[in-house]
Amino acid sequence: EAMSRDPAYAIAFHDMLHRVRPAPLAAAIRSVLLHGTPLADRAAGITRPTLVIAGEDDPMYPVADQQASAALIPDARCIIVPGRHISAVDAPDQVARAITDFLAAP
Image 1 (cartoon, rainbow, N blue to C red):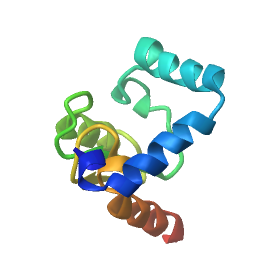
Image 2 (cartoon, rainbow, N blue to C red):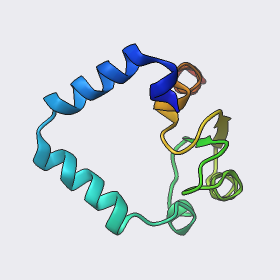
Image 3 (cartoon, one colour):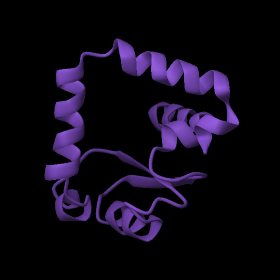
Image 4 (cartoon, one colour):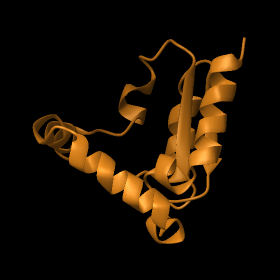
């Protein structure tokens, strides 16, 4: 959906994919798909300020799960943005603003 809304972004995104080294990209994707675990399982061990960004229509990691995970982390914030699973693609401005605000916070 995001790609169809912005053809220039789609071209830039696919150009980026063609420039990356395939082996590390494949390893990263495989790691997430095969070994990824829900954040809630690890949340209690996180002791640093944390920003959780959730796509409001993400079928893989629903908002309620992300909010519950963030609630387990001291000093965590959960930001909900429009879109599905890849928030930086679906809502790049909102994700960038959330990260910038998070990093600027005292």
